[in-house]
Length: 160
Length: 160
DNA sequence: ATCCCTGCAAAATATTTGCACTGAT
DNA sequence: ATCAGTGCAAATATTTTGCAGGGAT
Image (cartoon, rainbow over all chains, first blue to last red):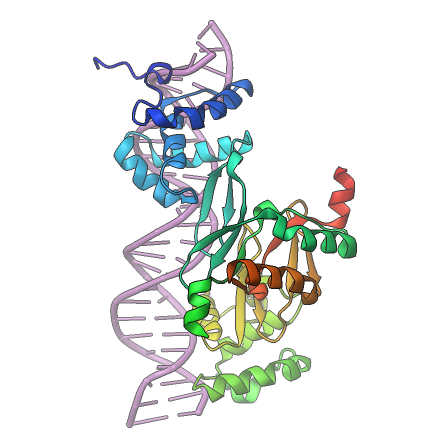
């Protein structure tokens, strides 16, 4: 092995432009006693590039290209560890597999049950509902984990 | 076998008081060309007795008692077939396994992410949100499939 | 009599765990 | 030097599928 692969040196070499987006994550990770390893860098890269809402499957496919040496098990364990640390989170878009996000890009989701389209909406839209539910039931909605299914504008029009 | 087990004769023998709730389902099933079999009767019985929101696991446990001869495979296939026919439906309460309902008992759900409590709420509470989302995004929310996570009144108080 | 539904076995998927080694700090 | 993180193998859990027989209509 002529090439040392210390993350400290090679970090983000595949996508230097992502360094900006990930640096805060690394800092937070380090601050909490986490270690910056090559697999973690590769996984976080896979998470921030391309469309977010990355499924495990999508991340695996991406890693097969960018870092085939990263084992599937590591992906599961790393996602769980990073979520535990609060730097990423996952949610379920109704049925189907869960999707993963960087924790700094939370938003509300609408999922089209017909075509699968994901519409991101203004969190403020939910304020009224949140207040009403809190008042009537004492239930504090966590709208970040909301998954709202229905028909997107296109599919609604097609079916009317 | 001295005991014939034709569903037509022995239907609901275990829980005759459930006949009323299930008769419309059987009619609908028959009307669509479906057949009333003993496993289906047992599965529907398991579905309507006890708390609804039945998970596959719960149904299996119940069937192990009431109809141990019903194979797990049959449970999956039957649930899928009955959903196809529109007499039952399932939804996902956030993470965890999906739950199954009779189609005639739809309601909105709030799921406590801390203790797992399920709060059923007035569908009218969502009217404002539904209108707002439709207006702004052209997205038709299907509030039956809504899964709303958060903290129930008890857990919210404990954590405050 | 037809063919939908079922049981059984086996396969396919998805996720988790034990263990010893490696490498980030 | 420590111990968190990893690879690998195997175990678990969950759901699906092929096929032949049985029963509801």
